[in-house]
Amino acid sequence: LIFPFQFYSLMVLKTDGVDVDKAMIERRYSDFATLYKALKKDHPSLLEKVAFPGKVFGRKSNINPEVIEARQSAFESFLQKIYHHKEVCLHPAFREFFFLPELREATENLKGGELKHSLKLLLNSLHLQMKLCDQVREIIATLSAIVVVHEAQSKFEEAERYATVALELIQEANFSSYLIPLMDTAVKLKWKLQKDKTALEKRLVQAQRTSGIDVDCSFTLRELAVTRFNK
Picture (tube, rainbow, N blue to C red):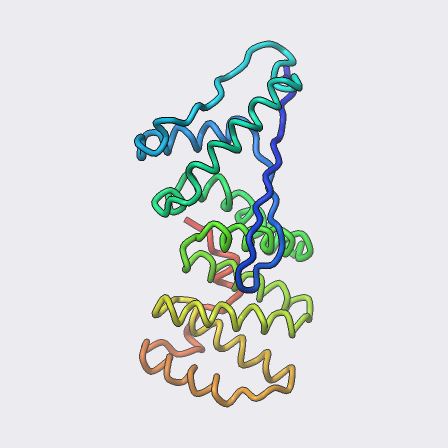
């Protein structure tokens, strides 16, 4: 037998930098339960007063309006309790709940040339990562993938805009494997847009000297994007 299940829609709102849109995801009860159990194990004190809804039984219990309403309220209280704790935001289970499923799907779409759907997932994930303070290196990786998609779509202005944001973040995070590929891509984008690339070219030369990595021996930005989740 296949029993029906309910998706719960989450909307995250916060304006920050280039992030000006709402972010939406849909998750099932089991997703919330997995997150709760992982955080309860590693951060029990944070969840002492959190009442998490238990499982319900019966063929149609999951889609019972009263059950759905009660769960929605409980899930909202649960997330509001945890999201502002930095140690929670950096927890693997938190990242798995909010970001990683869509980022993996976006990466597969990019590999397969499904650029429009990949971009939609990447932009939504970026909004979530920025709103919920994900690790800087992960935000840089998502920005870089967005650059790759925009460039492949010949949307060079958009590609350059996101490359600039990523490079600004790398300055804060010190050296990154994305630095040289991003700079190289940004230089080429400026050339295509007939913009002055002199300063960026100088930074690229300096980065190659500092790192000992020549741009011709480095991964391309697309190679980094499509292998992001390779084990």
